[in-house]
Image (cartoon, rainbow over all chains, first blue to last red; front, side):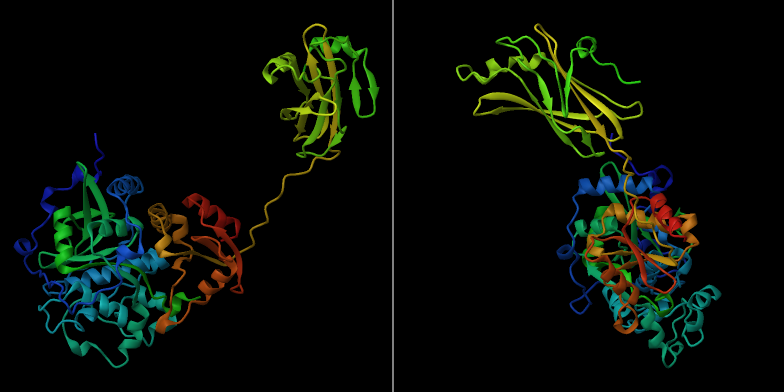
Length: 283
Length: 253
């Protein structure tokens, strides 16, 4: 009898291959546009990492399940895009947060403002954006942190002159002079374009969150699961309390190979491996 | 109290003629048995240092017979080593060699002992006309203590240095385990890529210092820094959370 991940014991089929377009909750939005020739693309993952076979991925999933999860254990913050078409940047901010949790610790994550990324790559609150353009903004310019007492405590002396931004609420006047200096502390550093299902799964096995889109929406792959020999992707959504729960956070859905494969092909997919070390983490 | 040796050996011990470095028993000459069984070799040794003892007086080489036919007598030889009470059994390796000019069979014994004390090797031809030789080796006046690992210096902070393209799936899970460990949550333990950069593309000094101190060791590594910010120690990243915690605790973190 083949191995089945324990999440299938309790998760509802309702969250499998959700047709986002047909099931947008009231007050929520989508916001991912397909990639085009102009969309930013990073170096190809498949040329930089040895790809794992499905047999190796299945072994990893058993190991991952015994450890209690993969990148879902580094998720510290749930986003709610609240009716704006900022899904790509919510997934992008979540990607940053996971990498920061690994690099600096779960208690030292300074959650990023999705709208601080989105307003630089989209002309309006619901025009949407491409997954690759979100990455381009995160690597070239960075993002601004959400203003919280915890964030200021972590930043220490650097908080006094720093710029912050709320998570949602499109208003370009929010950028104040010098905001780029703060954003420079919150850049994505190492990243790769993913062009195959094998690359998608290998990236997650190696610990790199996969940012992708499908069905007009953008989400973040954080874990793998298996049932009847089929390998699924567990993703983190940005519709607030939605989907299934992992480690105390309700925000997860499940994609089968047909969903994450075709979606990633049309909307693009990339993984990120590290973020810039901000000055307060240099010591 | 020594380990028992063959009763035959005890009975024949009275006839022993001792010389420096060898003990022999003269026995009846026979075509197919030892003429003058001897063990020749050092009578002292160091702990864990092998010593070689040669058994002579074995049947002559017979060039008219196949090797298989003429070394059947090897089955008749028995060996034992008596050890000090608290010693692990000594290691006695045996090698049969054929010497030329003169043509002779010799047995080369290699004795290795881990504990100081007196060891007696017994070589017993336990068939008529019987032959016996004993050889005593006194090992190490003072046992040499096992090497003590260098102490882990006191550290003020630590980080894990890795390379994204080399990080394995197993190591990925370990890093997530580390981030969810209750003890380590209270510690400032960073996990940084060897190509990590700071704002405006600046280098991260501790990463550069760790790379220099690691001298090309394979990643991932656990790097300890002292109060002054200098690298105090670089060790391979242990395989488990418990082992990582143990290293950090030993370093005072």
